[in-house]
Length: 398
Image (cartoon, rainbow, N blue to C red; front, side, top):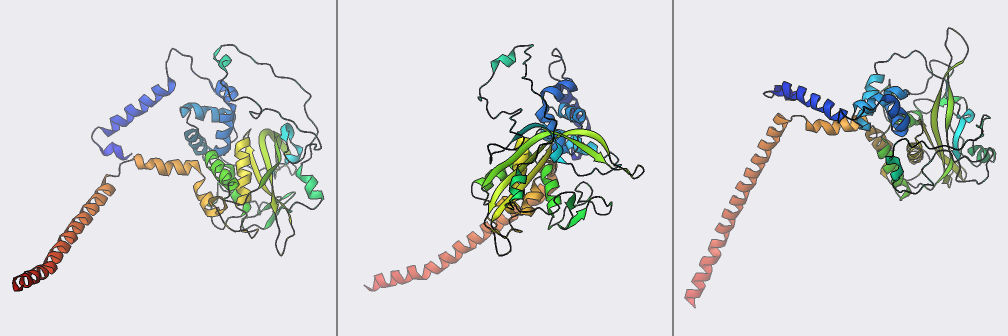
């Protein structure tokens, strides 16, 4: 830390850290928050930290939130930094979300869909009024019970696929999209999709790299960009084709075993947005999709991701670039909150030498401007003198 060079700086830093720990703990007379409490009662915060921290571990995410004093961006930074220390033993197979154990599933394009609609857990239909009953202790609400949906529920978008009204996706099915957009077989260890955690982001970026970037991008940034596309800066006229949240199996195929095994069930949110496409010389009029997939119950993030994903496809679909959300390099280069907060907050560190150079430069420029103004006034005075003498001669002649 540059502040160490300042007189007394090292002790000041230690004191600042101790003060932070004390403030984070709060009043010692109040029971300390446990990780279980954070995990169970601040679940949406935990799931956002897991998603943007690129690590699915609820306990570690809860620990990061507690350590970060409730600052979710700082917690994401902590979790992502820890993730970089972990060894990687296997690559999982692509998640099969068609076999998701549904907890919530809605569609805004069809009223009656195969498998039905399930509202599940949502803020959508409640009044935005403060509930003062929550101040009271020992309030344990009861939830209605229903039979769990155990059978796979078909995707709503499949209805449009069967009619040929939905644009076919590259890599649809058991195949992925490679670094340059080519189709690759995920069964081959040499043809894995782009891995943003191990490969530097380059441009042009394939859709696999773009979706990885969006999955761990800052939710607020994506929300603003998604909103901009709906207000005319992206030619987005979206419909929520399907929003689903539930449990999916994570499957790996160890070489030493030679067959697939399921190692975990994780909660994910999947969103497919439907957008009209007028077509071009090569493609008929049809619908295109924007796609979002996140860890946990992260519906707003997944919806924003889907809208921005579709906006960034403008160039490949021959659409005019009209807004920031359609600019792939702009979006991908500025969406990561760990990088963004680091670059912004580094301004708090000492910049004494840099500022002295700027200060000397500004003083020099100001002095040059004053000298130039003084020179201009002198020249103007000299040029006006003969005119005044001529006027005097003419007056005397009269």
